[in-house]
Amino acid sequence: MREDAVPFGYEDLDNNLSGICLDVINLIKERVQEELNQEIILVKLFQSTLFNRFELIKDGVVYLECGPNTIRESPDLEVAFSAPFFVTGTQFIIPSGLENRFDADSSLADFTLGVLRNTTTQQLLASRYPQATIQEFQGITGRLRGIQAVQTGRIDAFASDGILLIGEATLQGLPIPEDYVLVPQPPLDCEYYGLILPKNDPQWRELVNSVIDNVKLKEILRKWVTVISPYLEETRNFCEKKD
Image (cartoon, rainbow, N blue to C red):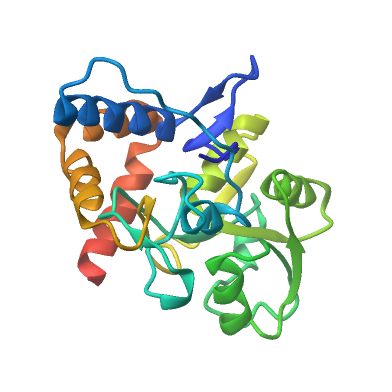
């Protein structure tokens, strides 16, 4: 699981690993215990990143990776995805007051946009805003530094999935929507997250999907996102209509 993706996986103020994914992994552990009729199941956690998340699965280091992973069809990845467990969409975080000039439906030719390297969001910006100036950030602190760059005015906006922007902004103590806002609403697209799984293990995928369909998972998500549930509901409704 990730350590740079609030609220899915991150270190809290006491440097303890926390997030939705830790609860999801524990839920899957309980399901495996039931399936095998064993009281003790050893779970070993590895830190994943944007750059090693698929390799950890392909190389057999881990048997699932949990994080903000957009479900995609790509044979080159050599992995499988679970059923979707979360939906969000691409947005920009900008300073309040800039929204009158920042039109996501325009070319954004006069703006400098920040984005994480090696993400589907980077591909989206490159194709949709070829006239904009794109500044790439990378590494575990990439999203943190990107939002800080918006604060200092080095870039005009930072693009990412809305839920991740809200999570990082909350961790940094940025007032939303008083001083910073997320645009556009509805988002530019819909991103469905799934767990990354080995490619040729349908039995394992079936078990994981049974956990995703469980009411306990919905309770976990509700616990973590209660404060921002109106935003999530609006995005969910938009994506359901779009599909």
